[in-house]
Amino acid sequence: MKIYLYKILFAVALLSFVSCKKNENPATLKISNANNEIEYASGLAIYKYQGYSLVKVSNPWPNAATDFTYILKEKGAVIPDTLQKNLIIQVPLETIVVTSTTNIPFLEMIGAENKLVGFPHTDYVSSEKTRRLIDKGSIKNVGQNEKLNMEQLIDIAPDLIVTFGIDNNNPMIENLQKSGLKIMIQGDWMEQSPLGKAEWLKLYGALFGKEREAKILFDQITKDYKEAVQLVADKQPESTVLYGSMYQDQWFIAKGNSWVAQFMKDAKATYLWANLEGTGSQALSFEQVLYKAKNATHWIASGSFKNLSELEKSNPHYSQFNAFSTKNIYTFESKLGATGGTIYYETGPSRPDLILKDYIKIFHPELLPNYTFTFAQKLN
Image (cartoon, rainbow, N blue to C red; front, side, top):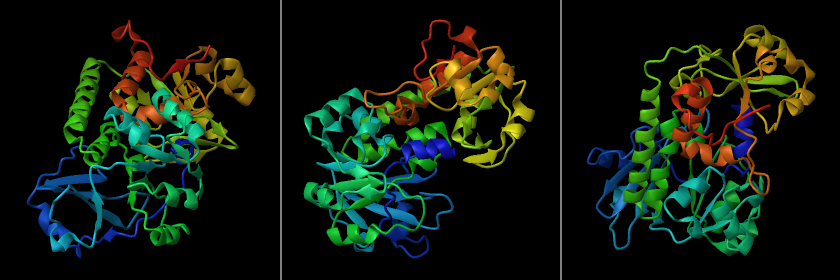
C-alpha cells in the first residue's frame, strides 16, 4: 500500500553497481549445482557452496528490469573466476548499516543488533533493545530520508550498507561508488506473501554466519502461521472488511493480491476489494469507498488513531460507515515506540504469525479467547 510504503521507506534508495543479466552472467551456470535455501520469498534466492554463498535479489522495486547478484565469501574461500565480477562481501560481517526499520528485528532475532553502526533517522526505531544502543551512541544517525550523510558513512566505513531502491534514478549512487562502500539492494518490501516477507531473515543469517539460527527461527514462525491458518480452516468468512482511511483527498485501497489482503484471506474474512487485481494500492474517492463499504461489518483503519473521537475528528464523514456506528473499528498503527516509530511497521513484517493471530482474534474471537493483541487495537 502506498501509505504503508511511505511510512517504512524513509531512507534514500541506492542502486548497486553490480548487476546481473540472466543470460550474460556465468554465475547462472553454477546455480544448478546447489539448492535454493529460500522457499517462500519470490525476490530472494540463496545458494550455498563450499566457502561461499551466491545471493540473488530480483524484482527489488516495481517493474524492475535489473537483478542483483552478490557473493558472500567466508574466510579462506576461493571464488570461481566466473563469479568475480559480482560484488564480493566478506562474511561474517563485523559492521553493517541498514536503512529500513523492518531490518531491525532481523538483526535482533539472530543476536546481531550490536553489529549495527548506522541508521538514517534513528527516531523511527522503536525496539527497546536497539534504542538502548542508539542512546549509548553505538548506532549513529546517518541522515534522513534522501539526505544520507555521505561523510559520516565514509567515516563509519561499515562492512556493508543494506538499502532498497524504488526506481532506477538516484544521484547518490555515483558518490557511493567512488567512496568504495559496499552496497546491497534488498527487496523485502516488495514481497506480498506474509511468509515470503519474513523469510528475508535468512539473508541476515547468511551475512552474519547465523544460517542455522535464522532457519530455526523462520521454521518456527512458519509452523505457527500454518497452525493459525488451520485454526480457521473450517470457518466460513462471515465478516466483510473495509481497510485504510483517507489520505489528503484520496483513499488508498489495498489491492487483492497485496500483503494486507492475504492476511484477511487467511483469517477467513471477506475483504471487499479482494477481486481488485494486483498488488500495492489504488486511489479511490471517499464516495466510491462509501458506496461499496458502507455496510462492512469491520473496518481496519490506517493511522495512529487512539479512539473513535480522534478518527471522526480527522474526517466527520467516517461516521457514515456502519462499522463506525457498531464500534467495530481496529487499527494496527496506534502502538508507537518511545520516539514515535510505529511498532507494527517495524516488527510486523518479520512476525506474520502474530499479525494473523491478531486478525483471527478480530474476526473469530471465540477461537482465541485468551489471546491478547500484539499489534491491533480496537478503537472505542
